[in-house]
Image 1 (cartoon, helix red, strand yellow):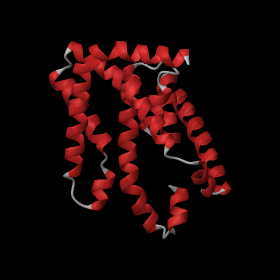
Image 2 (cartoon, helix red, strand yellow):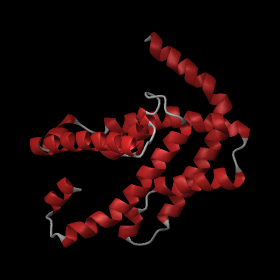
Image 3 (cartoon, helix red, strand yellow):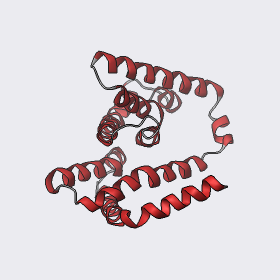
Length: 200
């Protein structure tokens, strides 16, 4: 109980200086959602996510205009607090029955894929001399649930903000490529919906 109270006090202390940055984050999120809604066709609309658009807007704003000093606290607050809360709320939507309904064979496949993806990420990191923290973030992003996993893992391994940004951009870009190419490959191989789901 005391830990929860202390955490709430910490959040309340961080909130006032975070307001300018939170406004900037909110504007970027709203613009990204609006632009994504303008994308025509079901294939492109699903392939290009709001997250990808938000990342591109963030890159544009940072590199063209730079960041006003007092927005950094709000950006950090969004990354460390709000995104974690979003992940928790996302997890609350998933029931144990949903997991069981997936089937034992699918769960075994999921565990095997996660293990393989993390192993390959670390191996590739060594080969290409990628810092361990960055390789870890790309590994969990690939193996688990994309950007949510990256953001959830980053504070645990004390990753730098540029490492988090690079990992998020990498996973978003390759996720976009996969969303476009995987259905084309699946149709070319005449995979059933169930087999395609397991394969992808």
